[in-house]
Image 1: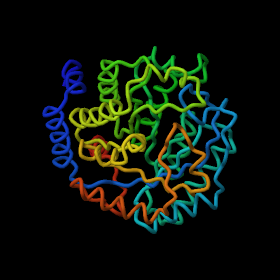
Image 2: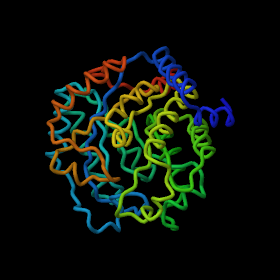
Image 3: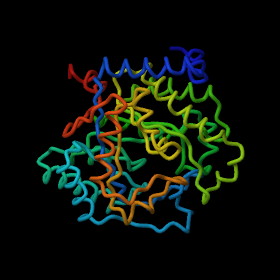
Image 4: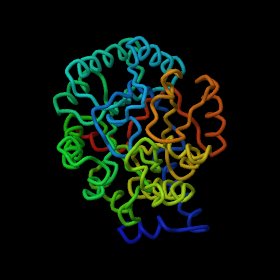
Length: 350
């Protein structure tokens, strides 16, 4: 697909939209099967050195109640994921680069691998780090890493971040290349429905992800947070239902562009529509990331307003998820790492 065709599909409606979703789901089933892979999401900390203008846990957001999960809490949550056959977990948190943090993550990775007897696959989403840090964590047991580019348009990127060296587009892109060199299954993603963003920019984002030869993608609608500078532009945003529609179209178009990558049905879709994640499965996604962070801290990891938060226990949430995934024609692959088929194809001759 070229740029013009992607723009047309992002804008399509009604019958053509149904055909788009059906073809994306058919292609996923043909290449990957109708299995959905789980990533138990553990939000280890909301302490962050960055000051991104859209993010609820940005450094300058004083009202946020900061937290850091203890080693015991993280290891116990990982044990829960292992016992309930999630197959994989994601350790996600605000960006820190201090030596104590880097070493702590390395030790946690090694311990999770030891305690699970290597049953758990581990994805990290801990921001921009040095290549040495990425390599250290890889050697300790992480094998997937998610670092969202947010937008592939450098000018729009600058409008979303403070104008300083800590928030440079070129650094973010260089980190993605470093992750690939270290051997990670490398993931990225974008926000959909940002201020100043056009449909053409979104189409170019998809082509950018393809040009990176990315292995996995997590992308969803931009949801504004009241305690951020970008909130002042909320009246310029497209309506939430339109952001949801665009998000689903982006998932479907990316599946057509990159048939064998992993594509997550993200929580941000669920924030707009309770069945947003399941609708993404019907549009070609194949990964779901249930939040298994201890409930006391989950409410403090608010990247955006109205982030879904359930008082239900993780087991009740899982049972409902199994039922809803089945309703949309998919089945959960319990106990599987669910690695990117795309990554394995690239490295099968190594």
